[in-house]
Image (tube, rainbow, N blue to C red; front, side, top):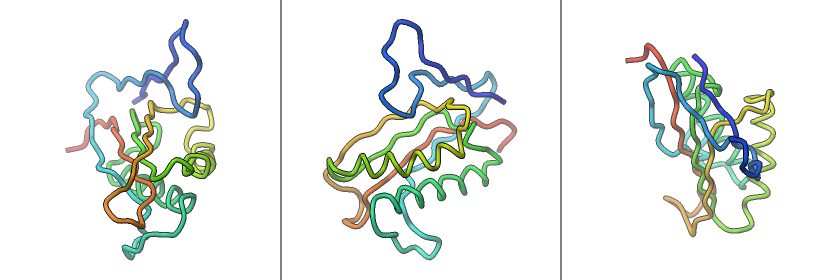
Length: 137
């Protein structure tokens, strides 16, 4: 199962690690994954934006494993970051993950927003995902 990801001709290139368009294959079931945060398995929130980004992607990868999916099945990500200064730290940590997840540079659609706060003051990063799966009930 392949999610088609591309950037249409006649548009500016993406300003980051994302594709303008990401389409699941016909017959795929879309799974909407709630926002994941930088919580370690024991429930503690790891410290710092970069560490939370890494842990958040690790948590998302655990969800993908549960679905029998891989990062290639991700159709869209939505990231919320606390504070205007957080994006550079997030982007560096995301690059380390995406180098492993998407070595071909075919990224899913991805939107990001800077927010005033999330569920608790220590949470700095939250990432939602839409994943295309087949044969999962």
